[in-house]
Image (cartoon, rainbow, N blue to C red):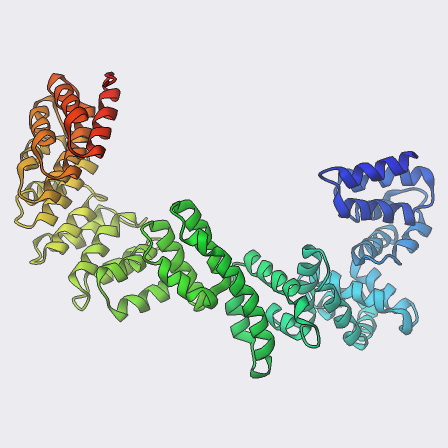
Length: 529
């Protein structure tokens, strides 16, 4: 086995090798005849993992290997041809557009297609049309542009063929180049390329368009809707059918019990835009807030709107808090969310529950602070409990003596939801001075209040509160309240706590309470048997 053949075998087998490295190696071997130069430069296919680095390196070789440069201009791969042009420009000390224009115009018009294709693709790589790119070519530029225009149909045909190449990377690059060359949206390019081609080839261009959408934060559904014309219906429907199958494959992930899987799947829906309208609307009611926010952003993208625009439209349409919560939560993702949330909170036409939810979310805004918090103070005196509760939770993010006094007053509010908000906020802010009145709420009539009080004492409680929590664990009729009491006792400890937890771990009629009690005992250093 020759050393060259052995290296080629290693290239094919190595993780960094693959077809690209192998093709690079073969091209280098084909175009460089000098053995020593070949041995030195072809290894760049491995070390640089590029298909044209060896060509560019020819410009530094002395004497200049003109034969190898001329040979590289005939390669089937446009990247190698363009690299040969660039290397030649360096050798001659001229600009790359100038060298390109001279190559395009230097041969017979009947044989200039490879050069014209190279010009189109090199320009597109720079994000420009050939005419714009070749403006920098001096007096040869206009003639080169004329040659490219004369070959327009053949260039388009050649690039459309590559849209159906086996390699996804080749398809993506061809799509980008065609769109830039024709000055059309990629979706229009794909629809045009499908004319006269069998449905069996549709998957190739559908995948290329989807990947383009993914890389540019777009959706294939929106892209197709924006460019489709009546005559395109049959071809567009063929693409929609492929994307519908992909959406169907996401259904198990969207219904997964794992929120991480649902988040991933919901984010994937963004790629499909209007085609995933049903799935995105359903995800708005997901129990996971990250899924809901992702769904809201996907719907905005599908409609071609900013998140702020669509959230405003949905909120103006009305609905109860269950319907509107995702849009309020989505507003928090905006850089300046304070103004729109306050606008909802202060809008009397909105349901009271929606206004209260908007107040609750204010601390998540970057602009929130004590100065702006003054706008919520009037809500502490509102007649509607959801507004008072929302104001208390809003003040958690902008603490002051006024907020502290408001909490103390709210602990005696006649509305349970206001008391719960006060207790939760006191725990969040570590207001240990309110621990005694909160402990007194362990015997409140409302279960939500008792549960909030027990939960708060896990952070605020003192040894003197253990007796009340032990009584709660032993006597409260609601398992969720007993669970919160057990967790608090596991933090506070002491003989009364250990006794109450041991009894609950053995005798409580709810298995979850038993489990939490055992875990609390472990935290205190006791392994219940």
